[in-house]
Length: 236
Image (cartoon, rainbow, N blue to C red; front, top):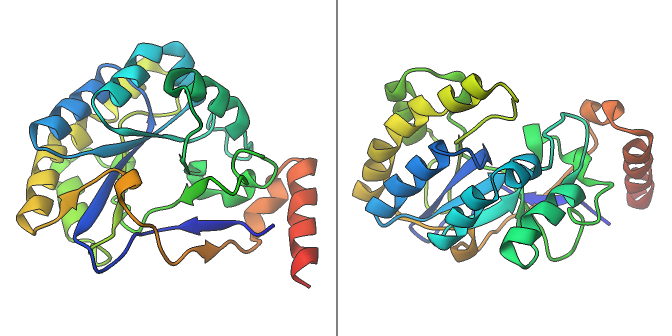
């Protein structure tokens, strides 16, 4: 089985997907939801299973407000593909499987040993606009990195962060603040250009990319390395 992932939707439609990684993170996720709702925008939240277990009501609020939840692993450990464990936690909230998955750190090899990630019904989603908001403290810099990204177009998927994988509560609450401050202007700027801000469930993803083995795979577990080897053998 090949591993494919998507970076964008149809380019002939004026739809853009705002996605948020590493939550839920009350009250920061709630602040994001409030901003989205106030502007008629929908978002997709790629959540961590460990935070869903800790704050199930925060995850429930994402769904209640009409936004999309996707799988972003359980612990966010760089070389561990614990998507199945995360799916169990998320499924308890949704009452159904997730449709979308994002590999943490975009290390796609971590998907190879996960039946959830490799399911034919799962879409693995990257992004084509990555403003690196997690590394910026100036809201203006986040705004400009998003709206001035040369890849921004119809079908774009924007990667933002409403939390962190860190167990440091102070960091978890502080890191998203510059993004949250920038978010109203990001949404206003996108809508002013005529973009409709939609959940990934409203976007037709196209042009999947077939993942190729890279150096990161050598850090995986023995099971993951074996899966990578078999994937390579199948292509020969």
